[in-house]
Image (cartoon, rainbow, N blue to C red; front, side, top):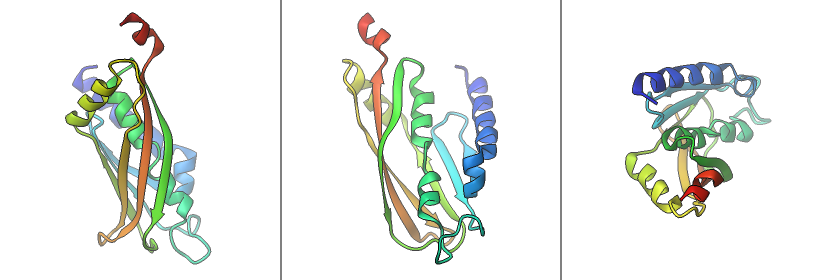
Length: 160
């Protein structure tokens, strides 16, 4: 896909995801999807409808703001010959989120090359990718570890 078309797709996906009811309900806002799908920035405001019992960011919303960005980013960078799924995740709550919180996701060419290399024989690959959720002052609120499932599609494996 050419760069202009990919950039248009990134803008459209950002717009659609910002209107997606689960994100609207959680107060999640996608601030940026890079034109090459290698960076994503997400913000979640603290609102009356996403506070927990003690008035801080609800843990489920903190997790939801990190899902499914690594999967989407890798899908767009690998292309249609690959199956990419979120396989597992864990979240470690470090400090209460008392205001807006932010998460940034990034992948680089070295990671994309590693995924291609590890899946070239048809084997699955389960990369683990960390993301930190921080508040406006930079304080770590939560650490999320995402595990993806990546494999060449059967039609590609059989052709090799």
